[in-house]
Structure formats: C-alpha cells, structure tokens
Length: 236
Image (cartoon, rainbow, N blue to C red):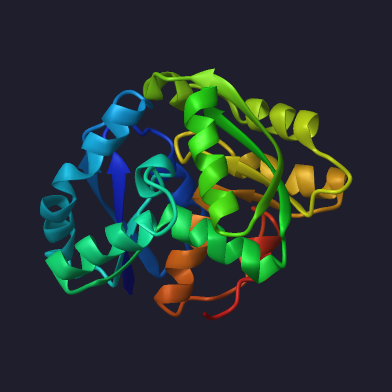
C-alpha cells in the first residue's frame, strides 16, 4: 500500500473527492490543510506560511510523497516559486514533494503541448498571474478566461458543467491543449467528454496532481475516465 500526502487549502471541498475517485485501490490519500478562504493575492501568499508544520504532520503518516494540491499557492511569485515550495516541504520532512503547478508544466511538456488556452475559476488579476507563470515556463498562452470568483467555497459549489462550458467557449484550433486551473473547481468529470468532442488533450490541475503523485510513487498504470493523460499514465 502506498500513501499520498496532500496539502490543500482549508476551504477546498473538491480536490479530495476527485483524488479518491481516481486513485487505484492500493493507494491511499492523507491530507492536511492550509488556511485559505479567498482567492486573492494576499490570502494566497499567507496560505503557505504554515506549510512546514502541516507537511511535518503529513510526514508522520509515513506518506511516500507530499504534494501541494493547490494551483495559485504554488505559482504566485512566478518562475521557480514552485521549486522553492518543494524545497521547503522536503527540507521540513525528508519526503519527496511536488506541487500542482510543477505537475502542470511537466504534464504539458510530456504531451508536447506548447500552445494552450487557459480557463480558470479565478478573477482576471489572479488569472493573469497563472498565465504569466505558464509563459515564463515557455508555454504560449493563446487566450485566458476566468469565471471571476474570489470566494473559494463558491468555487467548490460549481458543477462540472461550468468547466465543460468554459472549455468549449475558449478552445481555439491552434491550441495544442486546454488547461483548466483550480483544484477546487470540479473539472475531472468533464475531461473525457471534452477530449472526445474537441480532439485534443484537456488538462486540469487536479488531474495533473494525481498524475504526478502516482508517477513519483511508482504507481503508473492506466486510469480510465479522466482524460488521455491518466489513460496513458507511464512511469517518470
């Protein structure tokens, strides 16, 4: 039995259920929470102040990997910030670590997707920070649209149809992939349907978090129902 340690924003009500549904039977999920209720820059920055303590708590469950399963707290300060966060977790725990934004870049490179459109639950200011992070990592963002939400509980109440509808709206023929950003946004149920209709990879930040964690713990196997990335899961 393998164990994934997941750090989540305290008001996130979506990422854990979506992880549970996708994980293989021989992998368990263990979580700790970082205080965050608003998707605003000051609150996002404050969310990681306690990351060492919460990571140490997860480490006592003898988890095999720790992932910061949150989009904005892992990319807020631009290029390299995700690696800084990884370093803080690993130094505090002695465990291997990654972040959602690290996984996103790795997944896009794995798929050879260099031009993307970005959809998110965020307001424009926060969405532009995500866009800048992607572009700093040499991913061309052809267009970016957010749903304009700040209250994280409100994001968690959205249905999967909101992700489907936004992805359909923002798709462009010249985009290699569609990225749906925010781990509190229900995206997983929309991915397969979108890929079948649009004929290209659809990447969500929850999906890539699962993908990265499973690769790191050596549980690379086909997982159906959540898009081509997990359907063709291979070892790192």
